[in-house]
Image (cartoon, rainbow, N blue to C red; front, side):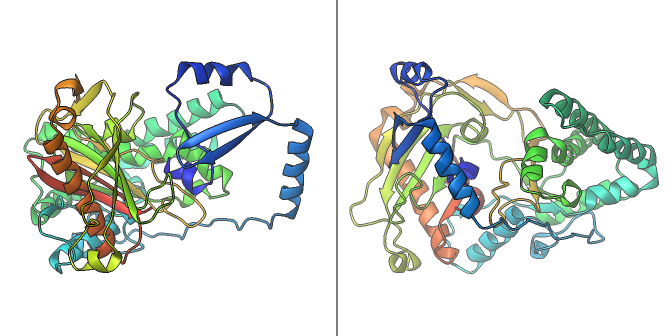
Length: 416
């Protein structure tokens, strides 16, 4: 959705069988889509006139600037603490995390907003690990696999990139690497894995994030905008997983209407992958009017008498929970949040332990059944969103977070 919005493309979901049947009946015809707010309509148009208009626009359009990723060297350390989450060392997720912590420490956001402990494995670490003698054979195999990447067909591309990912999965930690990660976890307040087997799981999760550089969507996306795949670097943000009661995504400016005075958010039971991943069904969605920017700076976050307006109730059939205290390794590349290119969501974030998938009974969930409970939770989510927007100089934010035992945890934020 972020990439579609930033690219000016329609990205819509239809739940009405009759409308889907109408669309299916127009297969092969040229259509124009009209979008007003959340409403989408369509009409038949003449193919020749559409192609002529497209040719004219293409001919008159200025050439696109080629996107070039800045060369990022290894900083010389396997880990960096929060204070060193800086440009050229870590990705935008980590830098935004640092900004949130500085805002919390400086009193710009209220103390009731909780932020998870964080550490980062910086840009260039994977390449440094690959260059170590312990991984000489892996590097030889990966170099060969990269030279054999074949994008002449979807099937061949998928198979050749899978070979690259399999090579990366064979990486071994060089001497001192895991000790450095453990030390930084302790310093950052993160409980490290408590057994050799748990450390193996942590390493596998980290390597899987690195390997996601060679997934099909990312490879094709980079190719289509002319970014050299070899210039992509992956830092990894490491955080404890909060076993959420609810997860949310906030857009502090309503993306459907463009109304910057109104916040829009979606909420699901359990962990957030059900919300941001490819899980069928709807989340609970709501909108609410914000206070003015000046009022938000002073600690008043919502408009006078504002209440959450529920726009849709949830219909997702599953929720995810974690089986035990665990960590998540979040991809944070130098190819995300670039001007003119929406690379967010292309790479994997991997928990150490797989989530448990359970059935969700929203009919008996207080988020649906108890209006006061729902208003309280949604209001607090909205207040957190406006507070973070105000702390980050009033720039509209795309915020991910969770609710646990009534507490609000903000996992990450990026400019909307």
